[in-house]
Image (cartoon, rainbow, N blue to C red; front, side):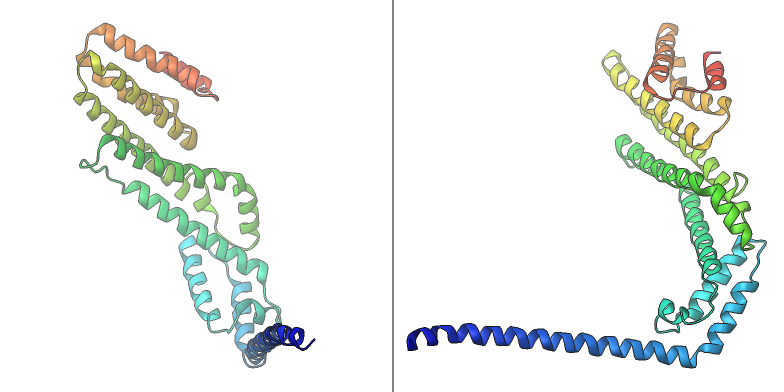
Length: 286
């Protein structure tokens, strides 16, 4: 019996140690939480006038230019950063949370769109890159444009209604604003894509390179069509982009040019699930 008691001793010591550690951790968490709550309580008691003055500024805020709104949000965020915890403190006051959140949302979305527009408009094709790497880079950038534009279009009407309620300018959300600039920059990106395809076609000569030439042409058509879908550019503009790929055929025999042209038309009609709209098809066939 004594041996069994000795065997159980380490287990009892381990259990006691674990219980002590758990108790110590719990006490530490409570102490940390108490310190945080005390800091929040101190802010609530001492920063009341400061918070109320900011709330007044937010309620009165109204802008005609989105740039002014961005500057206001930056100022507001800097002021609120002096609080130990913004949400924990502000919930104790009559804070205009709905409007403040809308102001921030508009500012952040506008800045994100401007960054994207700048990235697309300033894109330069690096001639040192291989054709495959260069086209992949432009394709990746177009995907980012697609994601941003489609996400915006899904929520734009709701966002405009909400922003107008809070005196937030909405012209930047329209096609005449930054969204329109992104679309125009995307068309320029498509031209750069076509230019790279065109220069690569120049380097591919001989009948053995014909499959490669056709593959490049089809890549160009597909890229231009995606830009057409995202940007809703006019049919004449999009069709001109499609045929930029085939202009290199002018130096070939007429039957070759006709063959490439027919390949473009047949592949375009069959490969895109949505197909062209009626206007685009009319221009393309003409």
